[in-house]
Length: 176
Image (cartoon, one colour):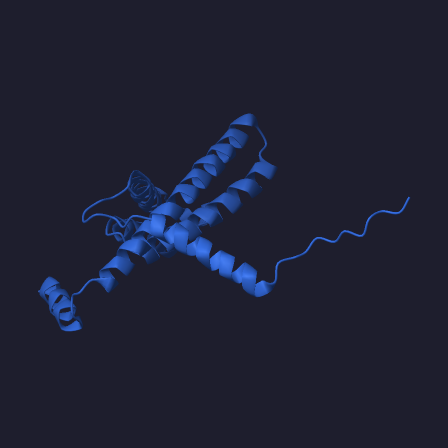
């Protein structure tokens, strides 16, 4: 018995692209911009994690006597401490680029934790790696929506009826 000749029709590229654009527009329309001064809980958690890690790195850099023997350096520790604290300030100010950079650090941390899980020699080390993976993965996931809301806020501010001259004067006034 011969099988019927049925081929699945793949949608053409223009149709697929149009559907994807329409879906993107629906998702963007569903994002509500952040209210002035609003900081969602995941953003505050990310700020707290960045501050805690920055302080921990700074204290570790300052208190470990022979940092080089532990695989570190004072300039490297100082740079990492400064970077984490600067990211915390940027995220608190709702800067999109700071959240993206922190997400990059979270992704790197998850890669390192997964590699460390392979090399874990006891249950405590494995539990620590799984905790780092779970916490980092959760924070990475929930920050994606926050980034969308920050972007929606920035787009709403661009569409507002404020003239370019007024916006320039406002930014000049903030500097003073």
